[in-house]
Image (cartoon, rainbow, N blue to C red; front, side, top):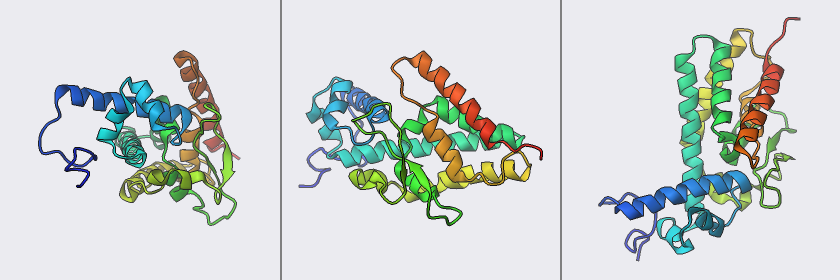
Length: 236
C-alpha cells in the first residue's frame, strides 16, 4: 500500500484537511522550525512532537519519515530567503541598501538557523579554491553552537533530505543573491573579494540562538552591523 493510500505522506490531497488536522499540521511545522533552528536538523522527531504538544504518531502520520519533514522545512526556508532577496532587489534602488536590507531581513527572521547545508555547499568555492570553510548546522550537543568546518567533512550525510533539497530552489536563491552582490560590487560599495558564499555565511552566523528573544534580536542586530562593516568597500 502506498504512503498516499494509507494516509501518510506529504503529497497533494484530494480533499481539504479537517480543521483539527490542519491545526496539528501547523503546530508540527512551527515546532519543527523551532527545534531544528535550535538543535539542528539532527534533532529527533520526538522533540518536534513534544514541542508541538502532539503524539509522535501524529507527526509520522503527516510526515512518514524525518527526511520528508526536514526537506519540507529546508525547501520552505530556501523559498523564504529567495522571496526576501527578490523583495530587496525590487524595492531598493541603491545597490548597498538592497544588499543590506536583504541581510537584515533574513537575519531578523532567523533564517540563518535553518539555512539548508546544501545551499551553502552549492555556493562554496566559487573562486575554485580548495580551502573553503562553511558553517555546519547546529547539533544537539550544543544548542548555541555554530562551528566552521572544512568543506569535505560536511555533516550533510547525516541529513540526506537536506542534502537532496530542491536544486531548482537553491539555484533560484543563489541567482537572486548573486544579483544583489554583483550590483553592490559594480557600484563600488562591496569589497571586490566578497562572494555569494560570504553573504550566505553572514546570514548563517549572524542569527545566534539565545533563550531570551530580546537578547537574541539585539545580539543579531549588533553582530550584523559589525559584519556589514566588514563587507563594505572602503576608499584606498
